[in-house]
Image 1 (cartoon, rainbow, N blue to C red):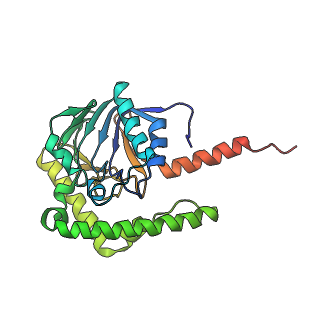
Image 2 (image 1 turned 90 degrees about the horizontal axis):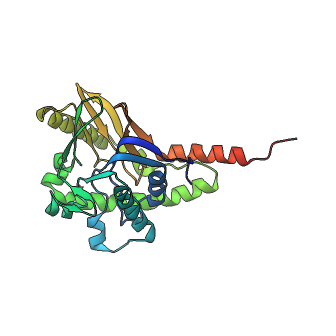
Image 3 (image 1 turned 180 degrees about the vertical axis):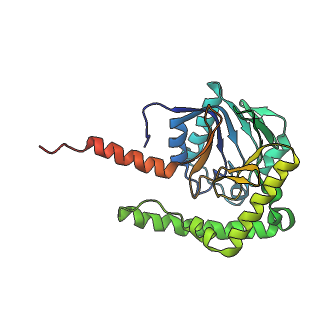
Length: 267
């Protein structure tokens, strides 16, 4: 459900790793988020559609089409939309520099914030050693990830019936496994080093499904997270500050407030 009557407006909005075309995609929550949040510029930071999964089996419900239409509608209303493909939608890298439906396709982009600071916007798979040197292992890992998401769906069905909030099994496991934590750290360091090499102040990326907003030895590292596990996005406010929005938490707070308003007042 929508958490506010009027959409909040930002200078820029960054979304990645939606994975439309998969059963794990939280399209309903994303659609809800897009109804409540607008921006002058919207960056789609890769893996918006999942070409890997769609090649194996076609899955595209109306809700996924609604997400695409909602984004295109924002473009028609004046928002600038920049699509930076990731590894799961790498087929779009054949169209770099082109426009379709008002959407610009680019391999990366340098975003200048209201403060004047410059940020490299890139999906980040180029700095994933598994993707670069052992793509077969990435496909294997993708299948294991799908299995974890399937289990996660049933876990949350039970949790909802018990009145508990959403919880991500895969995100929890990722942060508990030592090698996964080490991989995230190396990825963050590699992206920060690339930003430093290009002479920009920060980097905004996706790919690892782990939202973050931190300083990495003088480089502002921001990760948008995803819309499969955590349902997060990054926004730049009009004063140039950045914020990670965790939509599941905001939606749950909104539901609590709505129920509170609707509850009858005791006599």
